[in-house]
Image (tube, rainbow, N blue to C red; front, side, top):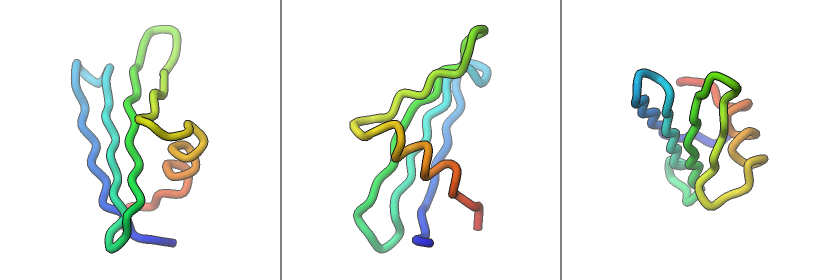
Amino acid sequence: GRPYGLTRTTRVDGRSISISAEELGGSDLISANVYRTVEADHLRPCEMPEAKVLAFLRGWVPA
């Protein structure tokens, strides 16, 4: 229920995606990279548990 500003940067024709979100008016941060390969997508959170990133992405609704 807290508002976040989210930035998504896509590189290498969509094979590399960086996600960064900052809680507006708060101190929470979400940061991860996604690498898309032929076999699968690979989530690499930045200094936080994967579960935190996945919970945020599942619950995020654009404003």
